[in-house]
Length: 113
Length: 115
Image: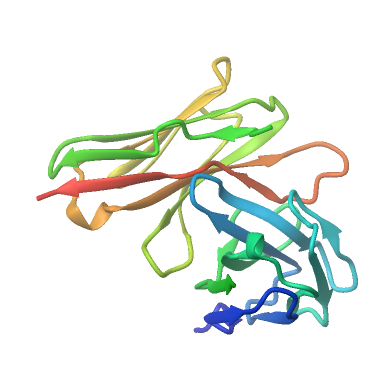
């Protein structure tokens, strides 16, 4: 029972490098989200996708791009990584826009040096 | 502009006693509130929720109270157990047109339950 799966779990990048965080869910959920967690800041929404083919900005979208490849997959791309993007990234999904509970993946620890 | 605030970064409680975690919000359009629990190196997991039309919801040892006039909610854990030691996040969902059901989270409160 996988739920929400994120890869990679750990990554170290040099400033200016690019990378993509992958996320897939097997619960047939319509909505998917990317959050970042920083000390003292809680979980902040980067981007979300209410349904396949749609994406929208969250609270902190700068420096990121996303792709909702299909209903299952929602990727987050850092085109030119910066030290300020060192964080723990969580992908999440929810049944539909009126559903109340979102389900999180286990997180991806990203360090930009 | 933090719409959901957890003003206590940490809380320490003795095993068997009550833990009370607090959360304040500023947006009166929030219509649903949730609590998530997070262990180190894991993703947050859903704990309990409450609709804005209610003032209390109970699930076993966990009870959430909502005071709409004060824009305040709290999570009570009774009795507290060492396994409850984790970070607790309060979250709120906005309502109205244009809402996409996304959640806004507080900063989190680290609960330590001492044996």
